[in-house]
Every structure is written in structure tokens, then in C-alpha cells.
Image 1: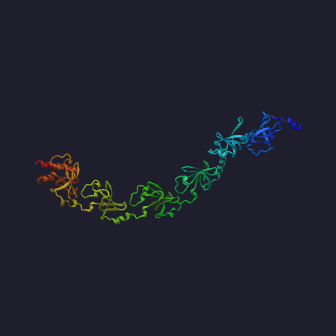
Image 2: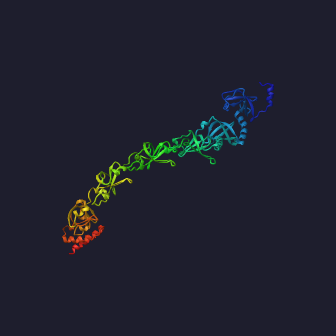
Image 3: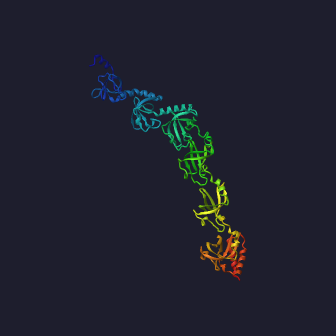
Length: 555
């Protein structure tokens, strides 16, 4: 029961919906809190409105908002949240107008962002949570942060917050301070923020710097990820600063001494070194001598005698090899290496081992249009030119007399150490029969032989002493012959008369039809043949034979 004095005081107070009044907690129930505001009946507030104040106690005085003075049960309907909202609204308006910040607690995830309690409920878009929109918003629920009010609709009582703007502002201030303080040569601590093909971006506590791949190590790097990983902390050297564009170039290898500074002392020219093959290219192999120092073995420096088409035919990546230093270019950071220098150059001994006139033997290793290569020893070849295969036979291609794998004997003609060539000759194993041709063949001699080759203008007959004679098509028969193959075949044995011996041109003219000529007929034909000038071609010889034939027929 109210005392008379309390009833008088209560009657003097005016209560109305929409007011904020002081109330005393008289009981905390499982679902509600009962509050006495001095009205004729208590008020009820849902317990959920005390989530931010779970320690509410009986007897505690709080501010409440009167929603209705009486419900169906005669109790006052109160709200603590609306009281807080109304009290905070003016403060929030002031903060928004002044561009200030406000602290709040993230309550829950909603569509498009987060719900934040700053005294009232406000919306934080996902794009404004951090500089990079986070993938997992759940990690922010329950956390307390500072926010900036970026949008406020007073009529709808909507508030939009941004945490990102505060972070960017803080980073900008740190960035400006760092740029003003930083100097080339400084060593700064940073965190790997992002990795690309050309380098890595390092966060220097608010300022991003680029660590280019070429400044990561003195040695070879295929990709920055071989040395760094995102989130890793490291010390870097400031190489260059562009304050206007806010760009900083960083280095990692500069923390250690440049291995090329004293390269001539470490690897003097002519010294023997060892290393690992780190890269193979068509023109050679790159060998790592020490971290940051590589040398190139060009394909021409692989062997003294063998022709190496590409480095991968001899080496594989990862091979441990020895080499000889051939040259150093410190400015361009290049070292030339050689493998063949590990062995004696066989060409240096070739001149004394195979002087001109030496008889040699070997296998035919290869045939070309201009000659045959004969292997004298492992890696050392000599070449027999097609013109040095025979004194007497006209050979157009070495395959006419040789084949790959044949064992042949030859004579050394010349040794060219500079160009690494040894000239051989097979025909010089015997005496040139043309030097004494008159002892073997004279005009008028009757000879026998086999057809060795047919041509449009006649046939070649193989005689003794490995000499070929030519029977022109006009000298095959008294009858006209249109095609030589119609009357002669290869390997056919024939008898012919020697009608011309030209030592200068190294030619013997034969006539099958003259085999039965009388001495007078032969003499008449000889006179015509003798009129031929040295060097006349076979067409002229045909005309001469035709003229001789006409003279023989007229008598």
C-alpha cells in the first residue's frame, strides 16, 4: 500500500508514453526484468534487451523508455533499448556532423554486411569492413572496433558505418610519415603482402614496397615463390624512393656482399672449378659455381673433336661437373667455361702424329656429296675428297665406290690444325697411270673391256689399269644409233679400237665399229681426231667422230 505522502508525490508526476524516466530493477526473471518507475504499476522489459549488460542486479537504477502506460494486464510497457537509442541519437548526430569516430560491437551477420551496436543498431557493409573485403565475416562477430559514421538518415533512423576508412586514414598517415623518414640504404622490417611473377609486394607497416625478383638473390630464381611466401616477415633494404608517386623499391640480396666484387680472385682464368648444372639452353649449359655466380659452357667448348648440336645431348640439369675458366666479364657478370680444356687437344698432336705422306687406315664414318670422312681415332677424322678417290675414274659421288663402315687405306696429304682438318687421298696409294699412259695404250691398239656406265652421248668402257675409255654413240655401229641403251648394256664385254689418247685431258677415245677398220680407214679417222683442241667437250668429240665417219664412207 502506498503511503499518503507517496501517493501525493505520484499524483504530482506526469507519466506519458514516449518519455525516458528513471526506474529501479525490482526483479530479474528468466524472460523479463521488472522495473519500478514510481507509477501505480511496475513495468516489464524483455531480458533480451540486456544482452550487453548481463550483470543487471536487483535495486540497480536504469533509464527506460515508456512505450505504453498500461497493457492488458495493467502493467507499464517499458524498453531499455529505445531509451538507449534515444539518448545516443543526439550523440551520434554530433559525431556524424563532426566526422568523428564511435566505438561499437559487432552483433551479427546480415545480408550484405554486419550489424553493429553503437548504442543503436547500425549497418557495416562488407566492403567497409577492411581494406580487402574479408571472406569470413563470422570472425568479426563479437569484436569491438572503432567506426566512422559515413551515412545517417534521421527520418528512417538508419546509420551506415565504415571501418575501412579509418584503416585507410591510419595507413595514409603512417605512409606519409614513413616516406618523410625513409632513406635509401635503410633496413626495414616488412611482411610479404602479395607475390607476382616479377616480384613481391612488401607491407612496411602502412607503405607497400616492391621487391623485384632480380633483387631477391644474387643467384638464379625461377619464381619469387621459391624464396618467399605470403605473410612472411623479413628485413629488406630500401633501394630507391619516389615520394611523389609513393613508390619504394626494395632489395633482399643487398644485405649480403656481391659475390662478383672479387670474382677474378675466386675464379682466376685457367683455373679448374666445379659446379652444378642449373639450366640448359640450345647453345650451352649454365653452371652454378656458388650462390649468385654462374658460368656458361658454350656447345663449342664441350669437345675438341665431336660436334655437339645442343647441350642437353651431353648434360642434364642437376649434374655436378668440372670445368676450366676461360674468361671473366665482371661488369656484365659473365664467366665463360670449357669442358674440353680438361683434356689434351688431339689436334695439337695431329701434325706430328700424322705428317703428310703417312699411310693410315680407318672406317668410313660418313659420306657427303664432296667426299668421305674416315675415322683415324676416336674423335679424329680425316676427309678423302671425291677428286682424290681415283686417278682415272670420273666419280660424281663417293657412294659410287665407298659405303659407310668400309675399312679403307689412305695417305695423309695435309694437316690443318687451325681449322681442324686432315686431308686424305686414296688414289695416292698407287702411281698415276696417266704418267706412263703411252706404255699401256697407243692409237690403233685393239682392247677388250666391260661397259661400266651408259650416258646419252655414249658408253664408258672399263679397261686395264683402272682406266675408262669412252665410246661415243657415233662409234658404236656403222648404223645410226638413236639410244645407246638399245645396243649396249652395263657389264657387257666389248672389243674396241683405241682411236685417240689425250694425256692432257686424261681421255681415251674408243671405237667399237673401228675394231674391223683397215689401217687406211683408221689413219683417216685418226687425222680428224688429232685435230681436236685440248679441252674440247664431248659434243665437239661427237662432231669429230661424225666427220671421220663421213670421210671413211666416201672412198
